[in-house]
Length: 212
Image (cartoon, rainbow, N blue to C red; front, side, top):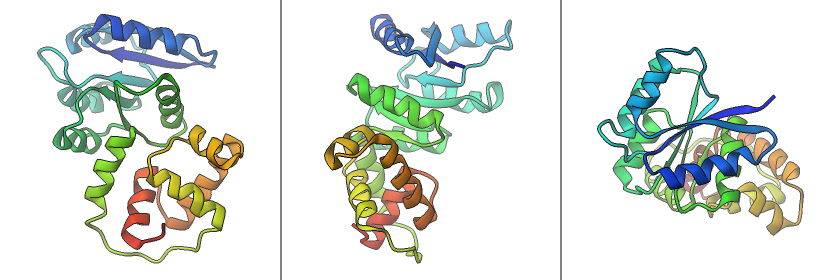
């Protein structure tokens, strides 16, 4: 069964490229692109169809992406949201994450990073471009209590170290010369031992406690 993705993006050429990339994948489909929030809201009036994932630009005309995020909690509460934006300002990033976005990728992301981020979010994880992850983690690392964690194996420490650097799973697999499935297993073990639920939380705790 395919995962359904909608794109809310006012730049036609960029949206077309993204739709082609997604539709080329056997397990993903992107049937709709909207140039404004109003266009998407209008469609929602006449259909019960909701996407599994929405790719959302922040710089939309009239009603911006941050406002849309707030609306989606009511309109499509089960839809996950991946921000795909050219904005990398700290305030916008924090507000997007706090308002429920599952990930934040920059439009300069390459196709592998975008598809990897989409799949990570589908699987219940987060997706962050390296500059965005660094920004968030620098903020998180200054706050929060130090909690006891279970010791990591040497290979788990290697994986966590690459996560701190902002590498995606495919890149970590290449660096360690292991399969992406094995990387996934290590990441799940890291989450369990650190008592966290996402990459952002894992890296934040690692930085706070000096684990890597």
